[in-house]
Image (cartoon, rainbow, N blue to C red):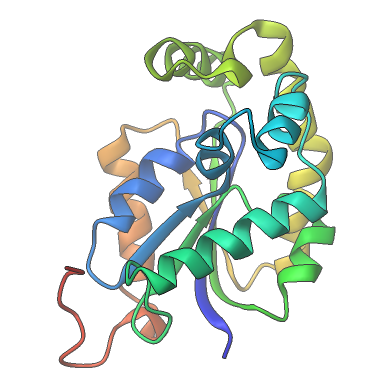
Length: 207
């Protein structure tokens, strides 16, 4: 069975994590942020060392460890009862990051919508990332050189994924708005997608 999935895309600082966390609190939605999963790894672990090596240079972690972390995390959430594929719509943030990952995940994901959180003001993105670095102690947002590198990586690699999924699934969201208005725009679209409406009797919040 393929996993019913919504994808959140956008440059670093566009607000994917904020919106994903909010959606994940709604019954029958489960949010997974690949970046958070990597940052929660310890430096003693193999994947933790790989993440630190790449993120400290503003680079994407290679496909194999990224997909391995994703699969292990989703399976762990399923076994713990936090994620039920029969009931929940998966909200992915930070994966797939390029077309190679998208093709690898094609056998696993049933993508029903792609939200591109778009902010044309690069300075606004930089300011958001710098504030986030101070608030969350994120090394990958620590200085301007790394920030610029991450934005360039997004432009050169991640945006091509939007073309891969096609215009029928794609929804552009102005992420320069306030978070509440961004959320409203996303929910307006989601509410009109029949696939994300859970069957009667399974819409209760996860315990």
